[in-house]
Length: 229
Ligand code: SAH
Ligand code: DHB
Ligand code: MG
Image 1 (cartoon, rainbow, N blue to C red):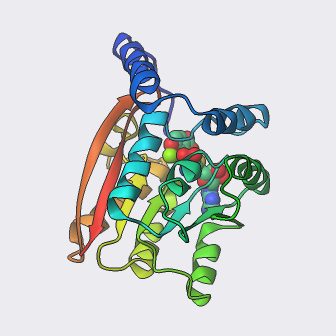
Image 2: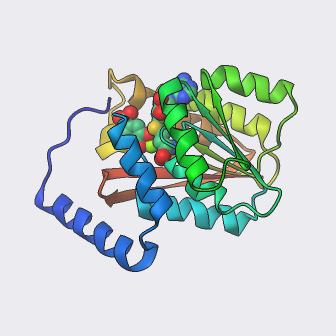
């Protein structure tokens, strides 16, 4: 979706350093490793956040004391498990997924992690599910992780402002993708989605934001971090 990347010597080092940090600092974890294995066996795309990134999401949720978390883009539930483990007793995570097969794998992975009572996977187009969440009065959410189709990030950001509150942290994955974000003439709808989102953030007086480039086992990419004022 973002074009083919070529591996380079630097990238080999990024992967090795990620492995070193995973082993020493993030630490192996049965439920998370099984979630990745099962997602692979089921043929899901291998595009979950990395272990170091998952733990960053977990730390952010704990720092915020988040009780209600919304995730847009579940895949096999890997990031959902990291986030849900940060919830206090009574906390809740809702995660949105368009592919029934992904949602099924995620449900099993989440149950195996002992989080079935905490996480709700909603199947359907995220934009439909978001409308429904608002109608049901679910929320407001303290932390929102946007990680679904990139062309719709602008809409997901607008929804996050509606479903958040003052103090909500919005995290968006894949805002750099090897630098493809730099091309204003890109024909890639994902790149255009990220660029349109960046323009919205820049013009939005209700938020304070930054974006951080990352390197590692998923190559060169980045996260947006947005605090709702
Ligand atoms: N957050 C996950 C990775 C998500 S990958 C993790 O880090 O573990 C992106 C997911 O978004 C895929 O499973 C894809 O099927 C889903 N997706 C794509 N378009 C969507 C849409 N319009 N609505 C809901 N989910 C969507
Ligand atoms: C893709 C999507 C992601 O969310 C990601 O982190 C990496 C790649 C993709 O669709 O290509
Ligand atoms: Mg992603």
